Amino acid sequence: MTTTYHGSCHCGRVAFEVDVDLAGSSKCNCRYCWKQRNWNVTGLKPDQFRLVQGEEHLGDYARSGEGFETHHRFCLQCGTATHGHGRIDAMGGDFVGVRVAALDDLPIDDLMATPITYCDGLNDNWWNPPADIRHL
Image 1 (tube, helix red, strand yellow):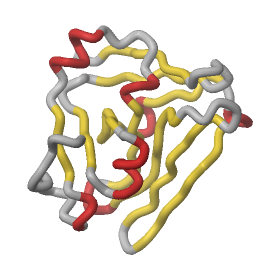
Image 2: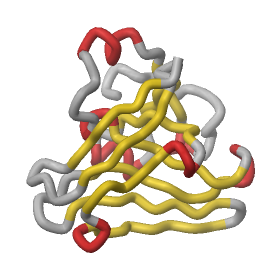
Image 3: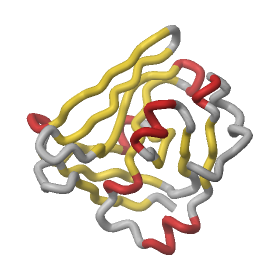
Image 4: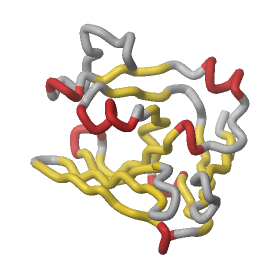
């Protein structure tokens, strides 16, 4: 069942809404995700995400390569990572990912019931879990 959740950064300058079925989330062991302790609701289509306020307060850390482009967005004032977007051809094109920690009205029981997919980004083996997930 799709639910609309509301999210924001710590200082409140950035706010968004997202329509999502919490059928899954992801954690990755690549260097970026590890350093950010990244836990996302991923695989969302762009029309499921609405930035309500704060575009002018968003920073953008972007990466691109063969078949992908990603943008990690964060509040320039408080530093909170809120969401990301981009294009990954192997995953069907344009996407949005939302940081679980940025969701303001996600009940903890719903979060704990959400399955997690682990990705071995550190070894560019994205479709398989890493050998060790205890630290993720």
